[in-house]
Amino acid sequence: MKPPNFKYYAARSVEQALGLLAEHGDGARVIAGGQSLVQDMNARRVAPRVLIDVNSIGELDFVRPEDGTFVIGALTRTATVERDGDVTGRLPVLAEAAARVGHVAVRNRGTVGGNVAHADPAGNLAPVALALDAVLVARGPDGGRDIAVADFFVGPHRTSLDPTELLTEVRLPAPPPGAGSTFLEISRRGRGWGLAGVAAVVALGDDGTVSEARLALSGVGPTAVRARDAEAAVRGERASEETWRAAAEAAAAALEDPPSDIHASADFRRHLAGVLVRRALGVAAARAEGRS
Amino acid sequence: MMQEDYLTVRLTVNGVAHRLGVEPRRLLVDALREDLGLTGTNVGCNQGVCGSCTVLVDGRSVRSCLMFAAQADGAEITTVEGLARDGEMHPLQAAFWEKGALQCGFCTPGFLMTGVELLRRNPEPGEGEIRDALAGNTCRCTGYEHIVEAVQQAARENSGEPIDTEGPPEVDIAAEVVRGEGS
Image 1 (cartoon, rainbow over the protein chains, first blue to last red):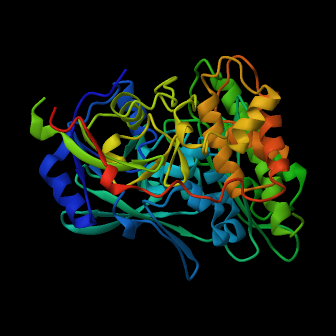
Image 2: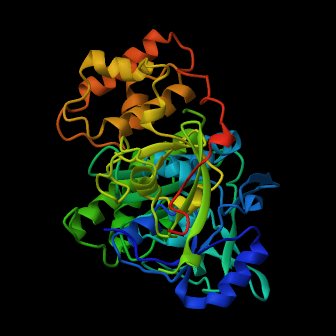
Image 3: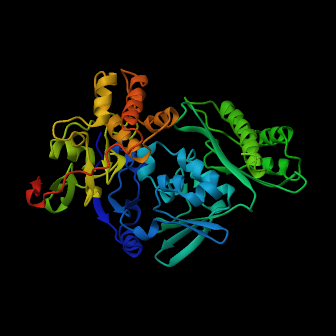
């Protein structure tokens, strides 16, 4: 099928995009990389009357490490983040999550802001944002506002962004120096749609116990979720396989209602969540110890 | 649809400048195939899944079924028709030929464009890197072994050099081809 027709506007600036959003309201959609939106339009799952193209707003395409925070422009391509030297060096959880978005051609076009704002329950960047306590920066008709990631994801493909707002930045506070991080995902094929994914950050104290742990899961609920019970299960404990197993059990037990579909049953997704938490804690802790 | 709803798009395809009048909903792949007659790029799934419509936009691989022609305004596009030079196959095309890396050929243009991008960025990819890069392209008859071997062979024969640093031919603006405008 081909998409139904629409009015097309190429915004040259954030102000212009906001003006168009205010003018066209609910019937308008912002298009950045378009890797999910055009797919939905081709299948006629959605039919926006107006598309506001933000690809020409170059000021939204940047990766800027500021004191302790990675500030990423919403238009930054996933492929850029995947290869950015600062990101791969200091925030492997983000680089690894970005590298597992779709395939090369999808990452060349798809954007960080689009991935987050699309709010796909199985999206890769949402758990990273949750694990790092991200702040989403939006601009709207009344100026800008910062949205804590805990308040951002409302449901499948739903966020607390107002239809007149544009997501402009994703601010990711970097984990403490010496912390290790990783993103892991399990798909039916080596590359492909994730059944479940996990973002993990681990910091170790001088005595070898876990001083800080952050875990967030994707694919196991209507939105990505923080695995706080699992975090509590490892904090202050010795970094060991036994500890990771306890966290895995806590993470699986805390899931309310994992989705069940032809790709995986709810029970299997719950099982995967535990496996991923256990493995990711091991990888992140090893990195924190400087072993890999 | 009313004439004023057509958008004028200027784009360069395989070194030739074009000016096109398109509906906003015109997908890039359909503009290439239907408006410009470049039918080497195939439409498989129209869902961004199969990779058969892969082209290079400003040097980077893109699913041309997930991009509107209007969004390619000002872009330089390379399709499979732009790979051969002076009647000589591109080194990756030659390697596909020698390794028998195709059967029905439907997916081949997409594999070639994905492979060309890989070999430009990484002239000496390992097998894992090749498989990873090609994972977004689906072949339903030959299978992947020969395709991976073809990319390996092209890399070997280029002995670690980027596969084709030479850009597309100079654009001849005077030869700009106008189609479909206001039609």
